[in-house]
Image (cartoon, rainbow, N blue to C red):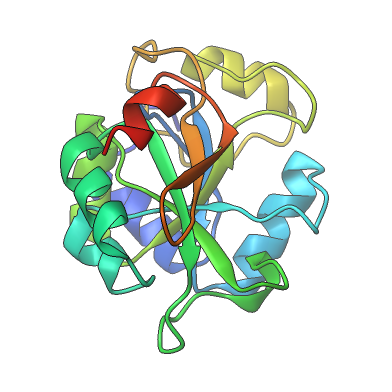
Amino acid sequence: MVATSITHAAEALARGQVILIPTETVYGLAVDATNSKGIAALYSLKKRDAAKPLQILVKDLEAAEKLADFPEHAHQAGQLFWPGPLTLVLPKRPEARISTNMLPPDQTIGIRVPDHPIMRALLTAYGAPIAATSANISGQKPAITLQEAREALHPHAPLTQLDGGKCQLKEASTVALVTQTGFNILREGHISGKSLNAV
């Protein structure tokens, strides 16, 4: 089912199913971030080490700040670079409903607001955080088209798939651990560490 509607994709997420999504960086596998069975299925499908946390996608900075504690410089980074290819790693709020089987021992979460119209429409329609990771088998090249993602995951590609065309940036997001005074770059992507620390 390639031409799945936003409504059908949201319904699949609500059932705890893993779906294929486009972002501006690479294609991803996504599931409801509160559904432990769905998250376990995502790890299994991707053959991902269970010790490696997943990214959380939300629709905007306000939604992100309901899930994690943002110091002022992280808030400013979110205002400047979101929506966009930046994942901020922050302490999870105690009240945030995120499945424990995707969290590291330090209870931090990596949050991003994607800049792709289909993904933003899905996040708005679904209204809850979505756990995601690149749509490939762990260690393999990320997919920048839906066809590449389907071929990488064959024969286990999710039935529900959103086709957003070729990814614009073709590389994963920059991942930055938020410290008390700045940012520790864990993975540099389209946004440079220098640009981020200029905040």
